[in-house]
Image (cartoon, rainbow, N blue to C red; front, side, top):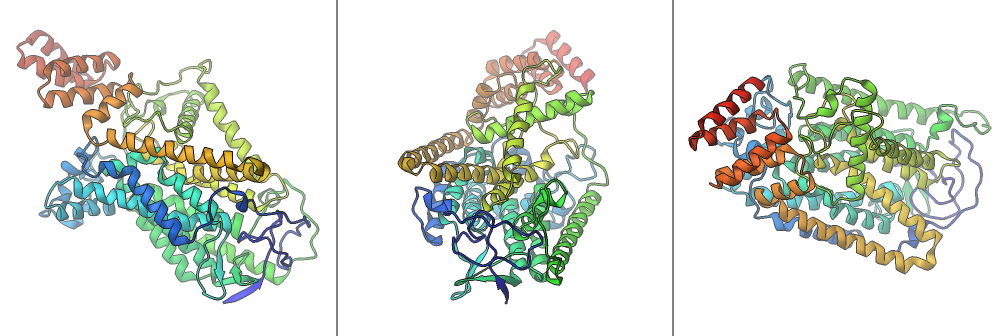
Length: 591
């Protein structure tokens, strides 16, 4: 193992979270100003410092307990199509069909396919089917709950690196559990966040869970690939501007990235996260100096060592770029070199003709997603068909919400970039990257998506949100240490509140009637919610309720051909032929 002297960040404590008086790096591209050391804010958090196995046990237990109520739940909503009606789960179907069909079991080259290509996720559904000797929901729900626990534990490792840096003990050679308090609090917040209910309690959410496991694994292997050359400080090694890297670990990281994409499309965003961590944290690049917006400090000249770490950084990014292009080209080819086709009611905001108004709608949707992370009480299984009305004019007061989200992000960016750059700022930069980058595939910026809002999309982005919360709490605790008891009580209350909401929301996901009824309370203007309630009541023989709900769905969306068709058939069976004929004719005309 190669090592050099430790590098001290500008806030006075080391990348690994220590506060010792180490020497300055001689391989610095930008000569850093000397700033007095200060105490690490980690020590001010009012929670105990635990060993890794203790923290892992706590996080796993609370993550499982919060969602355990769904272990014996039914197949609900999208489960009916992706699992119950998916022939790819049947033992008589070929395993290779998984790699030719979409997530719902349809041919990828079909015009009606949404091009959701997740063969590894469907393969695990097939295993659940085999273990349960058929469609036994128990064998589908339990893996989801356990996977969420695994993700939460893996995040302890990831948060340890993001908050405390990569640090290896010289005596044991093991990765140290740095920033234990911050990591535990962050992982606990993630474990009990109610926004995860759809991903954990809905069986189709396994795609998000499997993707997250591989996403985190890819990140950890990428950091490991940069640890072939470390800096020595006291009894540990840490990474800073490595001039060499392990190609084996780097390729293994990219392999996990590719497997993550085969679980869910968001997996490709780990490439952006690895790139951000490499540039901002491992190599400690000041982004404003890099683009010339901040005056560079005087340098004594670039050494060969300085040039070497830059070349190493470029080589790693060439591997990242190559892997990204390879995944994209394969994905594009398997989709038939054409994007999926969606209808207006799937995502009406993306069909607005005016570019400015359409962009405003997108930004309003971003603000709602951010609000769901901040306040996860307004949750619904489906956000289409009038749940979020389209903004048609800049005079709409909701435009203020669209502006507010960028003001918030702008404040975070300013906090990240104001100099001199500290370790906390680099951590905040990574938190912001983890919020934004995994969300990009759902942003409508690169292609139209088939939904308005999907809570499961925020599963990965919530990692960054939890980091922002913990950074804020750390800042408050270090600034006002005399109020640590009050802050501790607030944290305990928040965790308890999130846990209770998780259990409550998970209970709603156990049965379709409860899920649909809760959706009607949150989005009463959503025609699809009332359609689902009507269809479920019709299947259960509650014809009068079904007729009422079908009529309401048609009132909300006069072009809802499926509701008109179903209501028409019900009225025909009741011998109300005139109205039935009118409804069926209207349904045919719409189609």
